[in-house]
Image 1: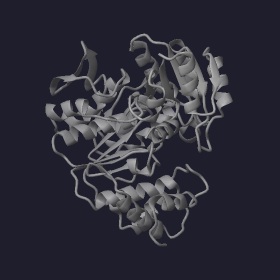
Image 2: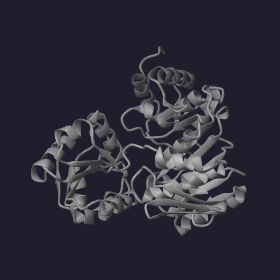
Image 3: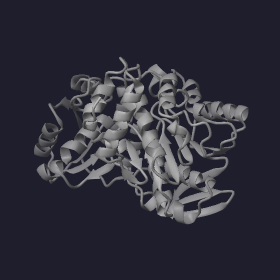
Image 4: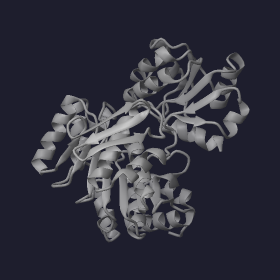
Length: 424
């Protein structure tokens, strides 16, 4: 196969397995063996699982490590605007040339065997990381943990489990305990694990697994505490107390993500400078991101535009909390969701905070929930809802009726990615 653009190769990779998600490790380990096991040649790995907050926690860790001069590889998913966002090599998004090269090499090494898109692209990330010097590698789990393609690292330096909630039941189980068991699959013998805030049945599962493996736990509420006091972030563990700026990412839920990131940095031996940089230097798109520049704000300048990619009930609770704390303003949602999500559970926390909702289907997404179904779920939750052909039509309609409104575009990372691409 000749080298083409990364988009061409990625499209070919989509055809290597009939399912988008098929959770086993055999295919990834087979390909990694063919690639001479790049996963064994990575800088120290910090492996992050959980239902909510993985990406934000990883972003804070990266900001903290880079704030003290460390070179950091980072792998995350899904991407928003471009696939390149998933692979950050020694601090920089992977270049088109480098991405094309490693994708081509992985496609060739796979030899036409069955492998999912996520599995082969994860192997490509490992290949890129193994060939460039860095101090740390941050790996975000794609789905679950136990049989996720990232879970091939025998001895990470640290693992982190952010809050676990009900999501992806068709793959991970119907109960919190079952889902927690999948997330706890990243625990490794003797490797410390930072654990964010959890429900009792979740922490019971994690603690039992850690005990079997002899994995030391650093648990929120037991070994570390974090809170907001008078506009400052207060963190305390057995090492001492830190009084830091609030994280640059908005929302009360980011306080607990910040706590997990700080606990991780402290476990790795870093001090206040790294922890402070984790708060002030962090950026992470589509997490209650204010859109002030670009095509959409230019077309509807009187609207206050926000973007969030959260897609489950826990994320909706966090969004609702932040909306409740923002200055009072008529608020409308533009919402598009996937048909695999709990749309009713997502709508209920938001209902008290919004005037109306315009439902859209997510463009070019086979698993989009039809806009009429989203609108129906919103009405069932008590939200005045209508449908729109697309985000721009929704914004135009809202601006005509309520020119000074606040508008939150939400419901899916895939919708968020579409908005960021269109916004330019």
